[in-house]
Image (cartoon, rainbow, N blue to C red; front, side, top):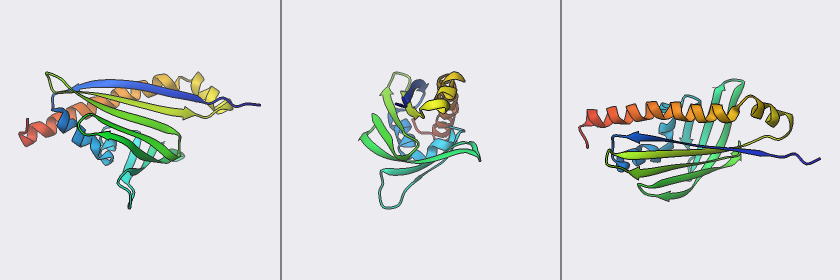
Length: 156
């Protein structure tokens, strides 16, 4: 029997009244991500390799998973791409587009769901809609946090 894997991919965007440089620099250090993504419990850079990061994600024990990702591509002030190298199979991309108002951030995440009964159950309960809604809801705090920080610093 062949077990089919399902890849779930979603993108969301937010306009931020800050420069692409300011937005990029906040995202560049992935340890900042838990500040605005409530299900990301922690992200830390692994010693010895600036491109390896350890993620903890979930609602809490026992609904917690971990993985290690590698930054696979960077274009300063434009793009950060990562993919998992162990644990939960996933990929992500943050893209930064200068606008008249500041910056448009597009965040894309993709997860390989397990096959079989577990994958079918996740698909049936609407994990795709949950992921998209969670991403969109996470970018709202990101937008307000970075705009408030930049305003406090008096930097434009």
